Image (cartoon, rainbow, N blue to C red):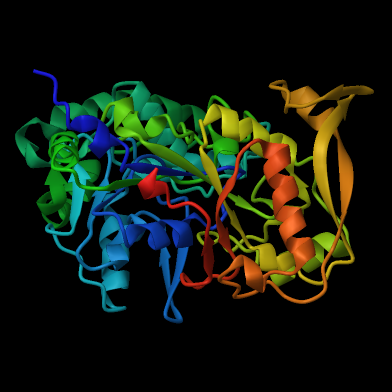
Length: 441
């Protein structure tokens, strides 16, 4: 029988995705929204994505745990779309508990079918990224994310549930090593003994298995109870393995549609898609970046915005807001509204530029081409907007903003084809202007 109550419940669920290349400030926005959420679900990526939360002046740095873990009374879920390094999980739980956050099987659930990141994945990732003969350097964090996803789609991954069945583990390890050892020989790396890999896994099994759950079933039950679910992605939509600037992308689907696949809930569980975008653009690692500013302006933005990777510490490349790219991610992720972050970093600029379209071989285009060669040739076409005197930092209402700053926000809305639902004016959770509450869509 059809559950006629389901529509009301579905509309309460929100997906948060990065609308650029990641590092847009998703952690703060997810934390802000988690006040109204009952459950926070991480649906893709690994511990290569960093989330920095600032709550009452206290800084929390997360890379694998969902952002809701710092909020008492919230259930955090690591979905099947994530690849999980069990040793890092134990370390991250220990680190955050030192800051006074309690983590237990009552507050954290991990999908039983989540693939595991092993030492062989980390070593392979590091070797590929460091080798001079591998061709294009993607700029990975060398944490084994890509190789772990390769094993998942190659049907040779070891999953969390396998740790609960030690009698069958040897055969699964042998299947994995039947691929990896020939590969390692070809790369000049020493082969791995199955017993060594088994010891690596069993040494951490007892610490992570208490969190294991059939999370798809748990989430379905919570949704039917009317609980509000917040889906949290890692990276940004422009790093999506299908829709991003390939091959300079991550190894999973980062667009909003993967919230359903990566959690085990159907697409009708998604009620509102909130995209996060900075008031300018940043990128870590290699790949095309049409609006990159390799001058004193880019340096000024980077210094004011403290643009260093949460996980790696690498300086981020900085540039003007690229409306072409955000307009594209609005479409590929079905974004209903934007949370615009770091507006305060642009305080004091005499003029601000926004990329409205590109020129490709002299022809005007309004999207990022899929071809890697074409991506390298596109030239940004800018619109210049007058800057503002005064500050937007800490503003909590439109009345606190300079008039020209409001004009800038409105122009961005026009160019990307989506409204600004939230406006963030500092890392503090309270320094947020709410235009539309996604949970009340």
